[in-house]
Length: 589
Image 1 (cartoon, rainbow, N blue to C red):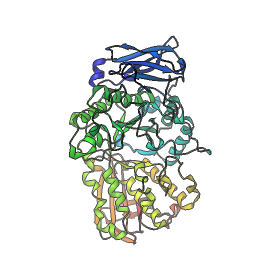
Image 2: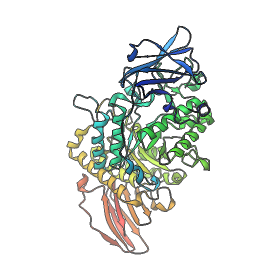
Image 3: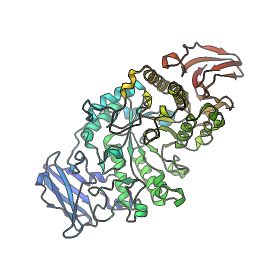
Image 4: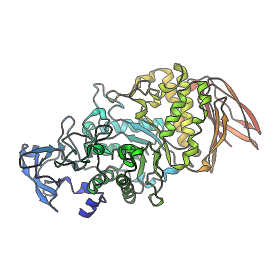
């Protein structure tokens, strides 16, 4: 351990020193950082929960004890704030924990050997590759018949098979850093180095990630660097003082009632640096999606209160340190602000993220599809606006869990119209999403057109697939995802002006849009009619072109009305008939 790096916020491997570590003589050495404690004791199942004094080490702000202990034994640190008063805390650097509602840490030493060298050897520049992300809450994707959770290991085979069948090439896990309250969905962590024990052991999680990699599926972890759970057994007032959080509630408490990390402290930054590196290095996650980045950039997430320079410095150091150690790591910003340079490189003055969630695109697009046909004509340029700013950042198009909860309705239910028109709208909407520049993310349930809002206590409504209209929609979603993965024009130049061109974005009276996607070896063209009336559109070109139909959102096989279309030539002009609420994709030769 380098104390200087730790206190300056430049340490990324504190987990190798702090926490519980097995030694060669079958003992376990426990170390914790509690600079303001009066004294600290270790308690655990190996001592019948009687106190074992821990000794100050290093500069006196760290405590250590070494005792005989077995794998799986439970333990806590008893931290005294004076000679008499104490609080029992779980270990901030614990590798595992009891299943909630119990709160003790658990000794764990990994014995897992990864078999994913080929995956990491083949990793290329993701900027020029398709990225179709499936966002999953592990506790409510599928449940056993008795509503019990599946283990990480059991989920591995199920998720790999499902992702391959549905043509997702990335899996994003909602937070699985240990957390006490199911209803927080993992966004109020208590264990930044412990995968939640709800679904099994840390090595079972390693197995899940390894299985994904062997099937050419990347895995992203939703990471929470802004705030942590208020529970007294965890980080809150860990050594009797606000060690990790601010002492002032005006900035110390978040809008969610949690404790904000005090990023002005180097030891706190080293804690978060080490956590981020731990998940990437020790579990082989491919990337981190950082939650609530606007709350890092601005004080309490409010731009009117100004930029929090301490947290901005933390972001830069965090991203830069991870990239230096693991250049292949992917870093995603869930940022609702207009702060510039989020995905610019650090040396160019940016924050160093690879991708930023385009929440503006998400809000504008969903708002458009909630509107009637006539209202869409009046709001036509809600769908063209994204391309005015798109090249400012490396954007990802998200339809995440946040859009299908709390009375917002699910994606299918947001679509305007009666039951069948909602499906027509949704099919056309999703082709617009997959054709639009930017990487893609969809939350579980979107692909089966689930009408019920997501509930962390219930599994997805898989019975919907018994109904022909949902089964046909899922078939369409699979084919659309496959089209996206197989056609390089849809991803190779997402962030280059050469990759996209409006053919026509001035058909306000018809709610018709036409654009082209390109790369060196391929051109694809898309026609959209988002009105509830049939429209005609005359396409012109300067030379003859051969059109190969790729996908029709109104095809019979997807619950629509059209038969399969044959290839055809366009010699300078052709008038297309566009069905109401429909989209078509063609390959141009």
